Length: 283
Image (cartoon, rainbow, N blue to C red; front, side, top):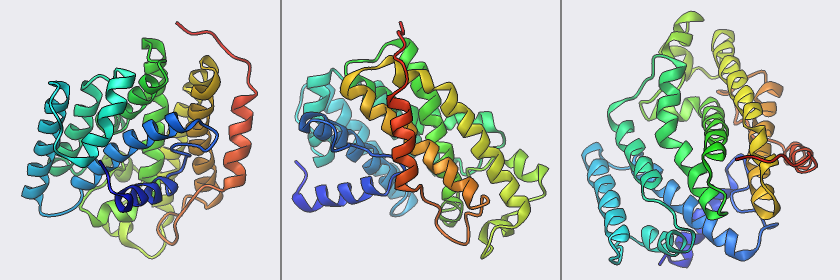
């Protein structure tokens, strides 16, 4: 199990997200399960970013092997997988989305740029969308139509985060802005390390943010199809994405000179708007 210090570190990272990972509005059982899922996803992401490249792949292989051990009914060795085990059992979480998160970490070791937006969405199928699938399983709401809507929401959240983290990603040797869009607006690598984003880079960011906001809108029926605590949680994720998109627009899509973060007031406003929407049946 995770030590108190590690759990505290995971909680700190969760608070830095654009959205409430495990809102205090939820009962403790759901908060614990969502934090276990988040802790695993964040751990895998960190493994793919930290240490020597060869060591990263070795550690990612160790995570994959531990997932296999878990689903074979054996005791996992890694604390973060041990923490996840109870949620996997109680919520019948399938192994496939968890393995896809590990595969995203492997992809990051060999693919550092994406030529088109569609290429980037293919990466999101590994790095972001599996989390939404697991969350729906946590709430017992994982039907095919919802999973498809969840993919729209999760990919949008990932794209928005890439927009916010341009400088940080570039420092790691990665560019998550489509190369064809960078070429279209005449952006080179030098633009990604300026003290302030030049107008041509801000146009690229605005294009990605606009796409992400339209994807969030396309995923709107997801929250409306849910009820109770599942609706509250998912509405918070969508609201966080909307608030972060609004923050990018408010900043003029300037992401290099300062950190762009969503305002709590805007998140709460968007959250309430989603929650008061009429429920919609989905099959």
